[in-house]
Length: 201
Image (cartoon, rainbow, N blue to C red; front, side, top):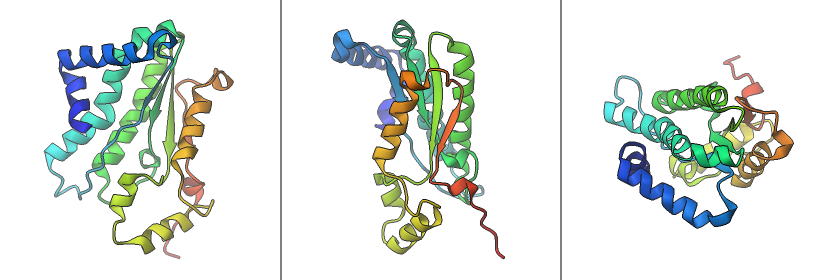
């Protein structure tokens, strides 16, 4: 998927083919909501982070959402649709070795605000920023360290990490008529973690 997204972002034939395939599959329903959810996470301290890993992170996490929004702009405009960018709590508060990922998500939050201004009133743009969610990417990062994964869940005031269904429900709400006045906004689906102070005392 990352390689495909990079091609869609940068190669005109890939962009056109992808657009036609998506719109053709939707048929008369049309495109009303674009959810930009794909992401990669390349972890390394600043001194050891490879530029290729930095660039790949920005390509997938920032450039691809912009390219897809650009690609489907006319379709979304026709439908008075909504772009939902899946950001992250790392745009607000991060950890060591997350410099590439945190930067990309901060940029995605900024992109959301800019798109809301640039595309309104025909298209809304909102950002949904989850904390830890039980995805394959999270599981891979904690492979062999289930105790640390449990501790991460317990650190959230809700007492658990999020479920994919939590994100889906929130994205559905933000893209629905019930949230029609929301644009350029970021909704933190964080289980309360950003409200919790962790200090050495």
